[in-house]
Image (tube, rainbow, N blue to C red):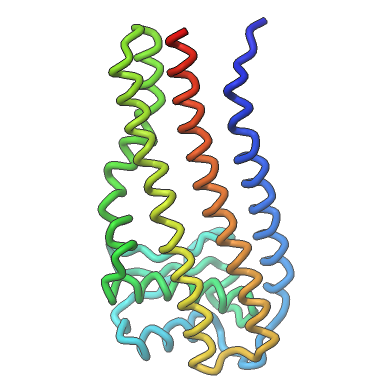
Length: 226
């Protein structure tokens, strides 16, 4: 039976991703049960933060699911999950403020957010077709196709890399916004940071996994030459 050793390259990324997701779930489970002293719901808090910082035109909506919170720059809409929207917990305020940070990035033309938005159509192409193109190159023993597949997937890696400063900056903004509005005590700020730092790990894991997968493609290309 033939064993493809290159699949082992994916193992560290997989383990890091599982660990990061466990950290997120643990932090959210803990701090979603701890209310803030201000008692302000995430929906009200984020609306105030956006208005105070020149982004009052952002729509705020509730959405289904858990940890499905996101900011949609195409419709200028901030969507908060069921466990966040009406909650005044430490986790809820941290997550909502993080998404508000993304809205402010757009309002202030944050360059990495603009770059990431421009990359989305190309990255969608790369993520869907990189492996089929690469495998076609192997089947037909045609290296240009294999190189094309690697280049297509390299765009996915680049997108994951560009995402890191976008997410880190949004978390930095979140803490600053909540503090400036007086929504957090010092102890509550520590909880917010733990939730946001755990979430940031998932993006790091995503980048590492994408990078390792590209290394696997390169290893397969080199092996095919032998």
